[in-house]
Image (cartoon, rainbow, N blue to C red; front, side):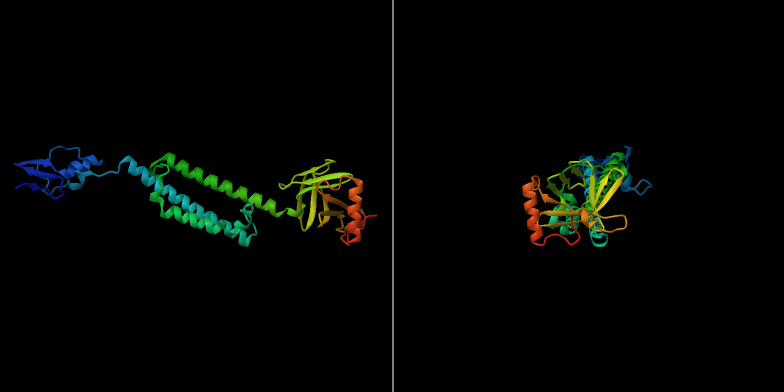
Length: 279
């Protein structure tokens, strides 16, 4: 009768121990045999133990698959944390970092949480690429570090853009003209003005700030029916009503006749702000 060892790797045929089919299959799958070839009786109790006969190690593909799954899970947790930060910034700091998505920006936190959860729960089914295990590869550590740096860069970039957007008034963005000046207020805060006096603009405390290098000027403003009324604010915070000026939206104010007709209509309709009383 053929005698099988307890571990199933050896069989005794006519007094000689031979590898079983189980051992042969293990070798094909990447098992590493013990260095010693002298096996008298695998069933004898000794300090050797069956774990020394074979060391079942994962194949390179299995190692890479495990590392890839770890990295995909890491991406999932990163997306979830990003979503939490998006929610906290919007709710408690009034900073919407996904403002450029418009109405959909109210749902980005939920989307990021769902996407991160999907990555984590389906990491075994997403073999788009291969990453070695973090604990076993310097290259993998560099990939993780690069991912964190990229995520932080994107986060701070979005925060900066959101803060810039929060300091602008969408009603003012565009080109405004009158017969003596053309004023373009860009969405990125730049100013293009025919006299090259100003180069930056933003809103502060409800007033329009126009910057000129190291100096800035404060204006009270109001947009009424595509007419921009501006009045400078003095150092004592008083509005200089007599110096109020007006611009028309787009190129409508470039000619004297068109500008004067529109301003006269606005005056007769009572559209002038009470703080705008030009002499």
